[in-house]
Image (cartoon, rainbow, N blue to C red; front, side):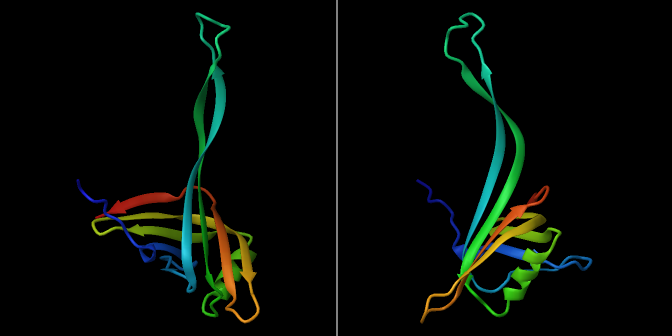
Length: 146
């Protein structure tokens, strides 16, 4: 048996880009947990049995679109709070890079995303936290590098 090659959470990175040329990407400080969601929208159609029209139909599915969602949470860090607020206030999507860094390869998606929500929780006597949710705006281009 060969054990799976795994990575720790710090090797999953969410980086926001600026509008300079070339774009410079940095990871906002504070996230202690990140989640990447890759989804595909499907349309369904019933496929009848031509020999037995009374037989229960099977569903056929066609791919319609792809989407990426990113969410993260952690401490509300002074170093990054305005970065998140600026991206949330922006009418335009922002440059984003998502990386999965394995020992032998790195998988990177680059594109634009909208910051759809920023939520802060501040329990008395404890550190304030932040949760951020982003959704892709167009294609997130995937590149695999050794």
